[in-house]
Image (tube, rainbow, N blue to C red):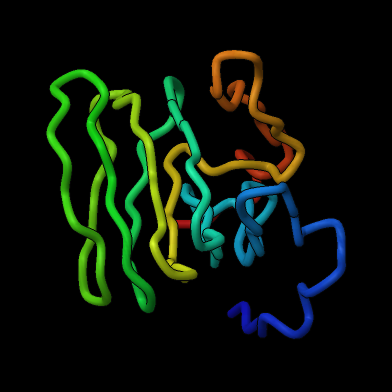
Length: 137
């Protein structure tokens, strides 16, 4: 069993910060469970482009409001507490928080915590060899 608090992650290497967002990586690939879990804060008034070409991401909004735009279709969806969006088709998207948004994000395959968005906004596929052999079913 793994039990972790956000306080344990705050200001460690698992607490990744950018100009537009902050991601506290709670569960990572090294845990060997097949997904990663993050609490992400998106800052009000920002605009962030994301494209997870190598991952599926589910995002559940817990607080705040804004919008997400599907860049392939131009379709815009409102984000508010209780909204979930699933990026299941390498969806290029833009997120625009009107207020600070807090959300819980789940990635498959899991991220290691070492990923950095490349020039295209993509996380490269980085694996944890030990994690693949330590998971039990």
